[in-house]
Amino acid sequence: MKTIQHWIDGAGVEGTSGRFGAVTNPATGAQTGQVALAGVGEVDNAVAAAAKAFTEWGQVSLSKRTQILFRYRELVHQHRDEIASLITAEHGKVHSDALGEVARGLEIVELACSIPQLLKGELSTQVSSRVDVESIRQPLGVVAGITPFNFPAMVPMWMFPVAIACGNTMVLKPSEKDPSATVRLVELATQAGVPDGVLNLVNGDKEAVDRLLTHPDIKAVSFVGSTPIARYVHDTAATHGKRVQALGGAKNHMLVLPDADLDHAADAAVSAAYGSAGERCMAISVVVAVDPVGDELVAKIADRARNLRIGPGTDPASEMGPLVTAAHRDKVASYVPQAREQGAEVVVDGTDLQVEGHQDGFFVGVSLLDKVTPEMSAYQDEIFGPVLAVVRADSYEHALELINSSQWGNGTALFTRDGGAARRFKLEVEAGMVGINVPIPVPVGYHSFGGWKDSLFGDHHIYGNDGIHFYTRGKVVTTRWPDPSDGGIDLGFPANS
Image (cartoon, rainbow, N blue to C red):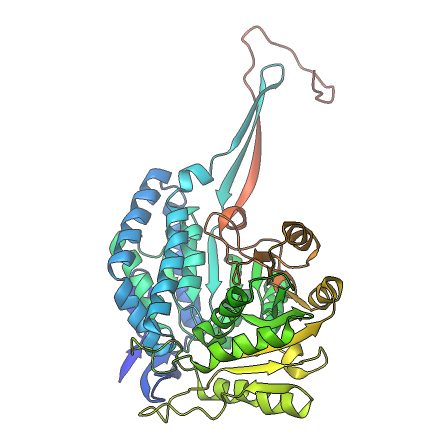
C-alpha cells in the first residue's frame, strides 16, 4: 500500500506525526493507500522553507518567473492524462471529466504566464512641479492554500500559479481524501524550475489547517470548501491578522421561462445537475420552472436522467462515476426518501442503484424531485450530489424572489429567448456568477470566480484581476527630483500647484 507524503523545500518528506488517513478508490470501495497527516511541526517546517525561499523568489525578475510558468504549463499538458487518472482513482469522476478539470486549471496557469502585463503599475507625471506619483504592487510573502476534494487539480491551480507568479511563496494543504493529483502537480512545478521552498505541500486534517490559519508567518489564506468551514477559516485567519478569501457552498438555481427552448434547458439541467456526480459548487441543484412549462420540462429532464450511464470512471462508457466516500453517498441518498415524506414528488429515484461488479463502490443513481417547496430539506441544504429539485413558480417575479432569498449566491442561470428578460435578470439577481442560457457560468481565467452572500467570505474573488490583487499589496510612491537651482527650506504643508 502506497503512502502519500508531504512535499517540503523541493523534495518528498515522510510524515513524522504518526497519523495517517485512508485513501480509497470510490469505484471499488477498496483502500488503495494512506496519506500522512501533518502535525504542527511539519506545517512549521513547510512555512519555514517558504519564508526562507521568499527572500530570493520575491526579487526574481518577472521574465524569469514567466519562463518557469511556461515550462510548467507544458509539463502539466504533457502529463494531463496521468493527472486525470489520479483524479479518477481517488475522487471517482469519469476520466473525460477529470481531463476537463485539468484543462480548466491550465487556464489559470496560462493567466499566470502573463504576469508581466498583470503586474504593470500606474504612473502620473508632473502632479506638481517636478513631482511624479507611481502605484506598484508587491508580493505579500508566505501564503497558504487549502483546497477541496471535488477538484483536486483545478482548484490548486486556481491558487498557486497566480500566487507564485506574483512573487509569493506558498504552502498548499489539499484534501486528505484524494491528494495524489495535487502532489503530482507540485512535483511537476519543481521539475519546471520552481525553486526549492517556493511551493510546498503538507497533507493533513484540521490540525494542519488550524496551524496554517494561526501561523504568524503566513500573510494570506485561500480556501475553497463548504460554507461552515469557509466561515470558520475566514474568521480564524482574519482574527490572526491574515488576508482571507474563503469560497463556500452553494444552492444554484436555474430559472426556466415559458419561452425557453425546453430541450436545450433539459439538456443543460441534466449536465449541470449530474455532471461530476453533482459534487461541484457550481452544480445546478434547483430548477425553477415558471408556469406553464413545469410538467413538460420535468418530463424531458426525467427522460434524459433515466438514460445516464453510471459506472466506474475508468470505463469510457460511463457518464457519471461514484461519490467520493460511502458516508457522503449515504448522506446524499437520504435526501430522497426525506423529500418524499415532506411532500415532494420523486420522479426519478436513484438511491437503490447497483453497478454490476462494483457492489462495494460508492455509487448512487441520479434522482429528480418535483414540486419541491422552500421549506423542504432538499431545498434548504447543499446536498452536493446527483439530486435535482424542481420548484414551480407562477411568474418571473416569484422565481426571482425565490433565488434572491437563498442564503447562498454563488451561481445562477436563466434560460429564455427574451433579451429584455435576460438583461433584467442579470441586473436583479443576487449572485456572483450569472449564466444566460449557460448552466454553469464558471468564468474564463481572465475573469474572476466567486459568489455573494454565504458563498464567499472575504473581499476578493479567486483568480483573474481579483486574484492578482489578493496576492499582492499596493504601494504608492511620490518622487521629486529637485532642480539644481532649488534651495532653501519650506515649512509649509505640501500642496498641489
